[in-house]
Amino acid sequence: MTTTAKKSPNRSRYFLDLDPKLRNHVKAAAALRGITMKEWLTEAITEKLEDEIDGRIAEEAMADTEGTISLEDYIKSRKKRGRSGRRVGGA
Image 1 (cartoon, rainbow, N blue to C red):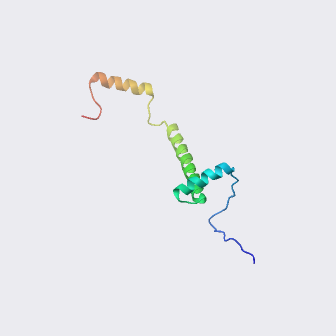
Image 2: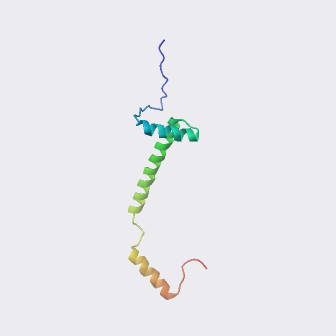
Image 3: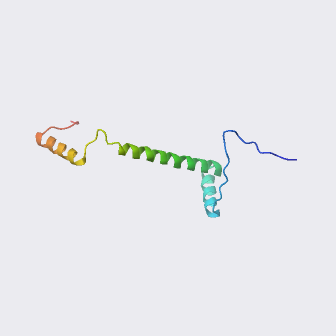
């Protein structure tokens, strides 16, 4: 009798060769949370990808200098406001 594994059309399999020590750490971490190693690894990979995407977005935002001023110009503007006695915001 031959059995064939059903393969979901929306998923692919990836075989991961882990060092036994790392595998044991993953297995323990998953067990502590009451989830499978597959679920734990999927969450870890997803979180890593989200962090990298967030990092790229932050880098792009930091590179966009339109509408910003230099630190020196900001300090000068704060000193001018201080001399004139005007307060910005607040009571």
